Length: 88
Image (cartoon, rainbow, N blue to C red; front, side, top):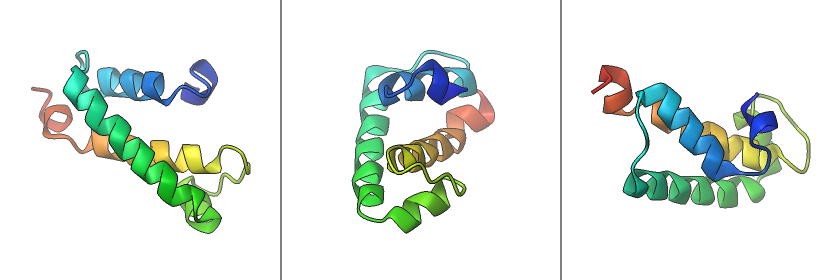
């Protein structure tokens, strides 16, 4: 659903996931850090279709697999933040 609602806009996708998970708006420095992580992961997955497909759960649309895999990395990171786990 996230990809359909905010197709091709990882900044909005990350913002929505963070706000839903943490229960509050994301601050600019945190968003910048997560966008940097997204960019790094995207670069990595663009270089390895097999790793991207595996991280994306078998999703193998050639155009979107790397972006989906990079978003999975960021979402996993968000879900493991202390502020999300403790809701502080």
